[in-house]
Length: 84
Image (cartoon, rainbow, N blue to C red; front, side, top):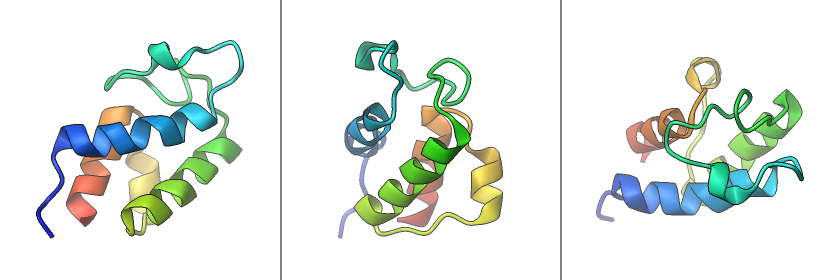
């Protein structure tokens, strides 16, 4: 299977994250540098849900070290790229 581009990963990642956005945060607020818990106001329980959904979608497994470095959309893309 050819490696996915950053854009392809981001395109699949964005709707996963959007599912867990608080009602007062529009999807248009998501960009590559968005801080998931800061700017996007995603709580830690939903962050775990996002990771589980990402693991399913991309057929990867996040380690505890990955969770510690997961802050922004770009971080998520980088972790996924390393694992696929």
